[in-house]
Image (cartoon, rainbow, N blue to C red):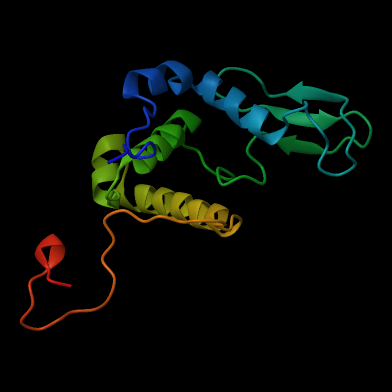
Length: 166
């Protein structure tokens, strides 16, 4: 029987994750790269020439277009918009949620991140909504194989799971 390559892919270990995204600067750089892969582009006029404002310690970058003078923050228009939490905490939440095979409750995430339940509940739901939206953008094509699937409803008097005669 051939090995399931998807199931046994190496993934990203916690030490590797922390090495790549353990600081606020690393996370901000990742957001900037994801948002503007070819460099800053003004969301209003599209020009690339800009000035960086508020790049001091503790504050996030704000970009000002030199053509139209429009200002936009690094997190404006992203799921991080309006947050006061460090991006490194958001990235850790993304990592923990994406690595949990059976899902991760908000309570477990609260314990791992050390923030209040209402805060982590909102984070969790924003992340799950973003993941669901991303999932709707791709359509499966070709042969699709499912591993360990349970299809159908409850049967009375039958044996459940892998031992089922069905």
